[in-house]
Image (cartoon, rainbow, N blue to C red; front, side):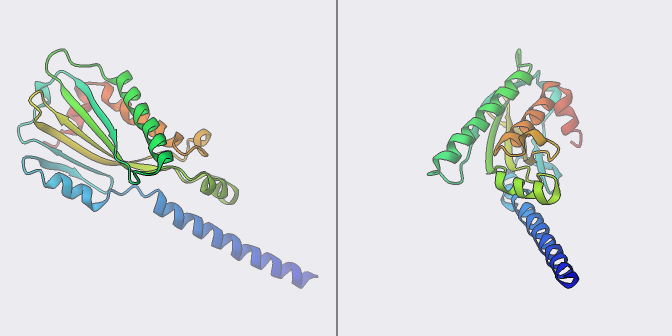
Length: 214
């Protein structure tokens, strides 16, 4: 009886370790916050821009003559979603909701421009929503729903003449601390977009801080 108990505990311990390792590996792949290499190339190919910040989750470039003092605010332009599977109606429908949510978040934050503003054009792509099943398993095994989802966002700032002044490409993830949205495919990402939009409400500090390296 004791031998059976010891064997059972040994097997269960190894099984749990295997499950934890598998979950962490899957989460590392699905929730990776690193920008794809193509993002860096797409910015560097614009010869009139100078890269001022580059790390694993953000690349930012500005026009050599950019001066934040020349602009009096931000204007919300197009917010679009680039779908990876054009025939997936569910993904397209859910991504559209995310798109609309970001536009609403920004509309609440932006103070607008009275005369000369920068137009924000935003594209969301490489969207990886939360996997509710994976979060159920990680919550059972690790007591924390770890999958927070991720997406890539490209924000292009243009002047009144249409000239690109600033480009930001960044990888955004939800928060594992947002427990209430743990089992929603887009809930954590929606909250992350709300936080992202909030930073642009304080003009011109929001842009001056980000382009200070120029």
